Length: 64
Image 1: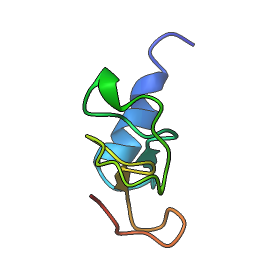
Image 2: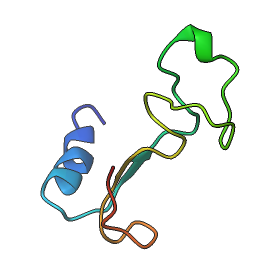
Image 3: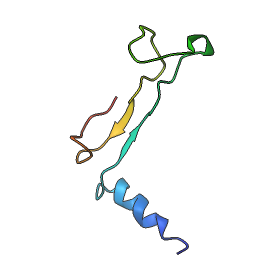
């Protein structure tokens, strides 16, 4: 239905539904860091798993 997506957005904004937004990859600072992997000693712009998680999403309340 057109316009039905607004309810899902409002549920998250008002805390009625949990959400998770985490990076599934490591985001390098520059192309010179490619390839970059977890544990290789490089310092990425955003590490693997960086992001937001609300309480109620898999053990929650964590943010970076």
